[in-house]
Amino acid sequence: MPTSRGAGRYAPSPSGELHVGNLRTAVLAWLFARTSEREFLIRVDDLDRVRPGAAERQLDDLAAIGIDWDGPVVYQSERLPNYAAAVTELTAAGRTYECFCTRREIQQAATAPHGPMGAYPGTCRQLSEAERAAKRAEGRVGAIRLRADVTEYEITDLLHGRYRGAVDDLVLRRGDGVPAYNLTVVVDDAAQGVDQVVRGDDLLPSTPRQAYLAQLLGLTVPVYAHVPLVLNEEGKRLAKRDGAVSLSDQRALGHTPEDVVAAIAESLGYSARTTAELREVFDRARIPRKPWILEPIGLFRQEGCP
Ligand code: GLU
Image (cartoon, rainbow, N blue to C red):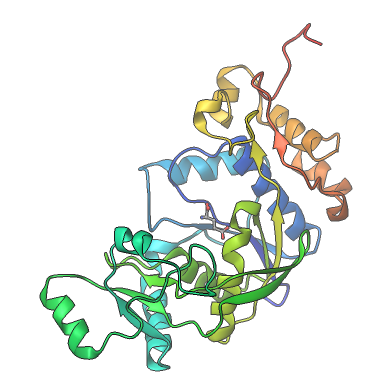
């Protein structure tokens, strides 16, 4: 239930174990919310790429590093009627169309002139009802796309300032019937009273689409803070193959959750061993603007190493 205090949130996808980069983003989202007297919510984005047992392990890991949350965890798989209602609302307003393009067709089609790079070129936008019926008769199942009337939208981010990015006719419901992430995130954040979204800066380019969609649905656009990711030495996004990157890997090496919190705190420029200590000293204006590059040696130097 939304409260007047507002809320921040962390919304993991249960596709595997959280790595230290995910944990650091979760800590930052928690710190932003808790130091601004907001509630902190957890939502499990479990509509896609779900690995059995992963959600439970992720929640255990978050609790182990001292992240607490308000109210029950929300699962997107239990909220399908809400996403369907949003699609119905947009459709009733003439804001959607059925798209029969395959991924390959979209890649092959040239991007519309003046359209944003990589944006959907709008191939199915102008199909007549007879053409749509013919596609359906071929056995093609349509996705539902938004009929966007802008190609760009501007958002404000606490770390990145004013950010203008592409908006295209984004997918709202995939051909397999699964509601698309850009829709679900907007519907859920608003329904949960989330007015502060802190997440990895890999999601910054999607944010103008989401803010535009929120505004079309008459929903309040949250305050955003897109925080730097943790990268490996090659500058690539951290992954399981980068070594002992999860809490269970670290436990197997004899390190405690407090050790991991200490490493995260250090990467943020603080000396603290618990999230409670970190909360006391956290200053959002001092967040490092550069990614945290994790050396192959891992989170901790071995005894005796320089
Ligand atoms: N579930 C998404 C992810 O793990 C994050 C969604 C969000 O924070 O908006 O990438």
